[in-house]
Length: 96
Ligand SMILES: [Zn+2]
Ligand SMILES: [Zn+2]
Image (cartoon, rainbow, N blue to C red; front, side):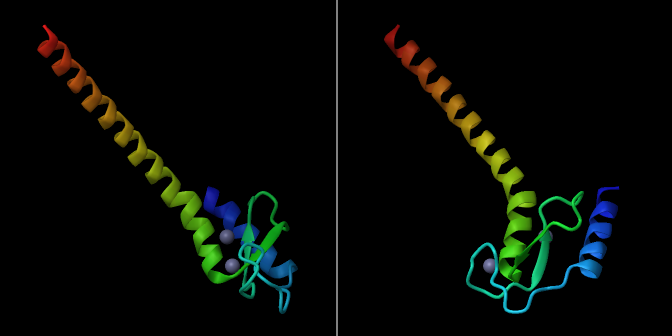
C-alpha cells in the first residue's frame, strides 16, 4: 500500500522533474546531487536533490536507526532504573 504511493511518486518525479545538472546536494551542499528524494510521497512533485550518500543517510537515519536507537535507549533507561532500585533496596537493608 505504502510502497505503491512511493512507486508512483518516484515514477512521476522521474517523468516530470529533470535532474538539474551541476546542482549541489541540498543536504551536504558539497557533492553533486544525483538523486531526487521525496520528503512526502503524497507530494510527488516536491523533491529535494541529494547526493547518493546523503540520500542513503536520510533513509537509513529516519527509518531504521531512529526506531532501533529509541528502543535501545528505552532498554538502557529501564536497566538503569532497575539497577537503581536494587541499589536502593540494598542500601535500605544495610541501614536496617
Ligand atoms: Zn550530500
Ligand atoms: Zn529518498
